[in-house]
Amino acid sequence: MIMDPGAQLRHDLRTPLNHIIGYAEMLIEDLGDSDKAGVGSGLATLRADARELVALVNDALSRGHAGAPDLVAARDRFQPPLERMRTAGEALRRKAAEAGADRLLPDIDRIRAATERLEHLLHHGSARAVGKPEPPAAGAETETGPARSTILVVDDNEDNRDLLARRLRRQGYEVLTAVGGRTALDTLGRRPVDLVLLDVMMPDLDGYSVLERMKNDAALRDIPVLMISALDELDSVARCIQLGAEDYLGKPFEPVLLQARIGACLEKKRLHDQEARHRRELAEWNETLERRVAEQVGQLERLGRLKRFFSPQLAELIVAGGAEDPLKTHRREVTVVFVDLRGFTAFAETAEPEEVMGVLREYHAEMGRLILEHGGTLERFTGDGMMVFFNDPVEVENPAEHAIRMAVAMRDVVTRLAARWRKRGWDLALGVGIAQGYATIGAIGFEGRLDYGAIGTVTNLAARLCGEAGAGQILVSGRVAAATEPLIEADDVGALSLKGLARPVPVWNVRGLAEQPSTDHAT
Image (cartoon, rainbow, N blue to C red; front, side, top):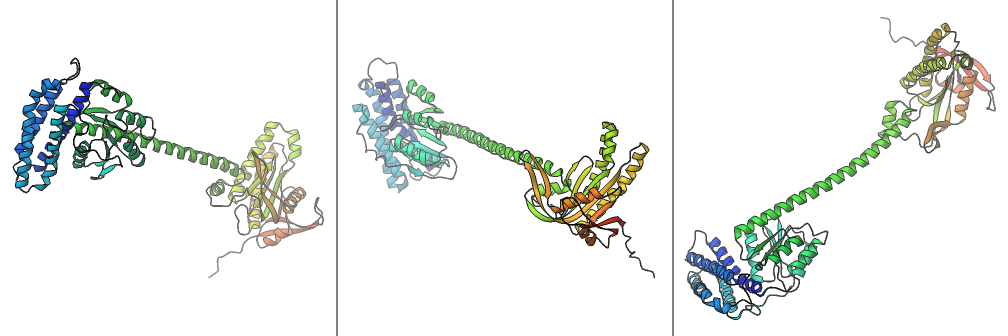
């Protein structure tokens, strides 16, 4: 990096001056109202002389002067405050030692060492090899305060790092320190950090390169960076801002100004993290909502299919997981009921289509109501024909009894409807067939068009009995008659040879439900 000689010299001179002012301020803060060693006024005077010397350096080496900076011409102006600072440092150490204030001695010694480096600079014009060497970049040092925001201080100068870390620790921050740019990037890759205080001029990797690499890294680009440097060139400030720095603070800095800018950077980081967290939460909510909507749409579609065969309550129970999936193939003993209207074919041939649809609407509405009331499962209906069975998908006690009660109720309802239909010239009546046995039950069809069906001899038998039933007849198999014997009044029709069945089948005609004995007892 090519730098204006005056800017380089200002940077080198301001570094020890920043140390002198910084350590003097921290000592004054530590003393507070308890200055038993009597060093408070001396520290304040020394700090004032250091600030005066900063102003003289800025004036003597300000940009715009032609040629290289001439320290010889300005040395006479620098010497009085520099001599006062050197004398004050010696006097402060002596007073502190005599008062037994050993805790003050390390920082006073740092002030005296910085004064010696400054004097060397003013006489030789170079910061190289002045004072003790910097430790190797072995890793990041950690200063830990109360668990709040974490700040990484990056500076190749040990006193700069120490000053910033101690001041930030007093303000309650957790502080990490790095001795150079490469160590800083390594630390950022391992530790979460809320703010980086970054020096510009460092030997291994300068602040510009660190800043550029951070902003090109998706994991690091949102960490705010506050540049802190004794380099005061406007080009340097502009370059840092263009590379993505939040702010640029020159050394020596005012502690109040530093605290305000750190607070502003951390607040911006907090708001950014909050916004990012809200975006993540919103994305998670949207994903959850989409998943739930898809699940609910699937449930509604399944519920719609199930309601074609089962009562709404049963369909909802199945969808909610309260009953087994009836569309999975399974085998169960069921009671099957076939019903249709006697005389419907002749009626449909002679009546207008609108009249046929009107009769079917009346008929289906009444039959559907009775199927739901008695807990039946509608397997299918075709025109006037319906197939209903009991004991699937939910098992019921004595399914044959449910089937008989439903069939008798259906016959009574159709008898009332037929009375009205006859006035219009339509001669219709109900025929019913009921059988009981095992069937294989489940979904039948193909993807996009599945029906719920039962397959087995029992369904064929019920259908054949319905075909044999006359107007108003309920024909049942011997097995159904035996299961419901106390419930029904029935006549033995005998064994009938039915199409598709190898042997004759005993059949009974149900006239109605038997009168149940009264439970009242005479007194």
